[in-house]
Amino acid sequence: MYAKTAFCSVCFFSLGHTETVRMLSEHGARLGLRTVHGWTPAHFAAELGHLSVLRLLHSLHAPIDKKNYCGDKPVRLAEIYGHQDCVQFLKRFDLYQLIHDN
Image 1 (cartoon, rainbow, N blue to C red):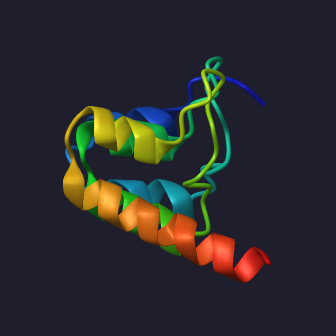
Image 2: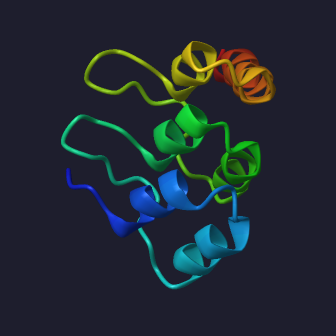
């Protein structure tokens, strides 16, 4: 399903308030939905540097490594906007996935 969801908006506007994200998840928010441009909640969190939200999304098994329709993963957005803590976290996740998928 491709729509801008309330969950994506919360990841963008939450200012890193993980409790709001957690509450929505506990009440059935679908963590894997994408926008019409292929953005996941992780793309929004990475763009604004919400490391705590990215960590929470990961712990909830939400996709944090999917490409949007321009081919950008959340890690690329974190790089573009200079959020080095998010970049490091997402790169560690990518490395972990690479090791465990082979």
